[in-house]
Length: 161
Image (cartoon, rainbow, N blue to C red; front, side):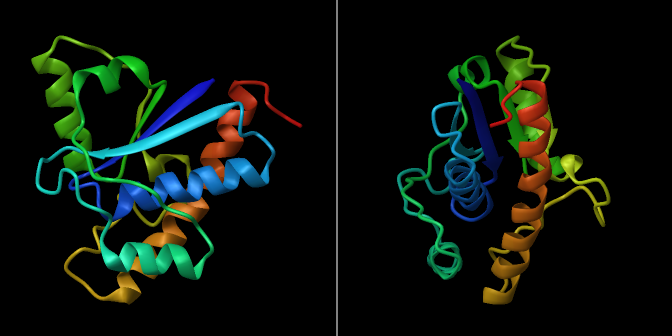
């Protein structure tokens, strides 16, 4: 089973949305037994909290179920997940700092938008301080980027159905 971890700052906006969209796409493709995913944050700001209400509303508008409580990245995650997918450069650096602190390496650390063939830029913007339109923009970015990420995973893991 291929294990994917989506990572943002607080684990209440972008990464739980990415986890939900990813799981939905995997189910639609009939690949539920081939993938598992989770999400976490690099900070401890929201541990134990539900995702932001705007994240939940956006997901609901797109029929994406989300059942998640915020948690913080730990060294076990780095060892256990096959792919670590960060939403922006700051979080990627935070992940690298955790790896350095615990002397752990990981060769599958990416920014989500790296998988998009023609991104405007490589970061998924944090919608936390904006309005609902920012969450919809982030949904579109994540949704499209995950299509390309899943194509890469299907090829790398020989998972065409």
